[in-house]
Amino acid sequence: MSAPHEWITRAETDADIPAIREINLAAFNTIEEADLVDDLRTDPAWIEGLSIYSAGPDGKPVGYALLTRCHVDDTPALCLGPCAVLPSHQNTGAGSAAIRAALEAAERACERFVIVLGHPAYYPRFGFTRASESRIRISIDVPDDALMALSLGSKELPSGTVRYAAPFGI
Ligand SMILES: CC(C)(COP(=O)(O)OP(=O)(O)OC[C@H]1O[C@@H](n2cnc3c(N)ncnc32)[C@H](O)[C@@H]1OP(=O)(O)O)[C@@H](O)C(=O)NCCC(=O)NCCS
Image 1 (spheres, rainbow, N blue to C red):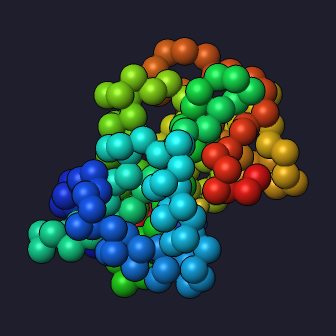
Image 2: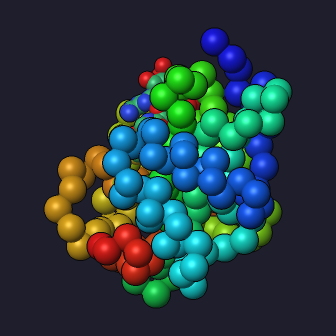
């Protein structure tokens, strides 16, 4: 198994867009997340430099993590997702590498808060905690432990309802 430090991580360029689409198509086995990423790319929620891929020594993208603008009530935050890894490379650290690189890039960009709706067994390793503990809610019915939040600095997480970018349809 490869360790995370063996993965190269980079912000996407136009040349990477087809490979990122392939990762999302393969990881989710449906067109939805791949189309979502393409829709987000032309949405005001898109932030340059926060669409990150991980690649092995050959430079071929295999893992992916995206951060886009969302709000908790009126407080700006970032939404993490989709996160995806080619099935042939899952569980080898490619996802973690892309996510950690995306969070580091967000911190460098002075972003403060990140929200994720996902697997409660996976995201706590990056520091995410149950969002409901900070009175952060979502307008759709999801398991309480699936909505998680992270403060990138020392600021206390805001409370309120997560407002996603329009392409999420939430
Ligand atoms: C989820 C995903 C992004 C994780 O990336 P990855 O590179 O495979 O995972 P990593 O190598 O970074 O980490 C491995 C760990 O993740 C866990 N993991 C992998 N897929 C998981 C899943 N679907 N649910 C919960 N945990 C998962 C593994 O059990 C392993 O845990 P351990 O370290 O405690 O043994 C990737 O497996 C994937 O693309 N899955 C299909 C699409 C998907 O479900 N995306 C996330 C939507 S929230």
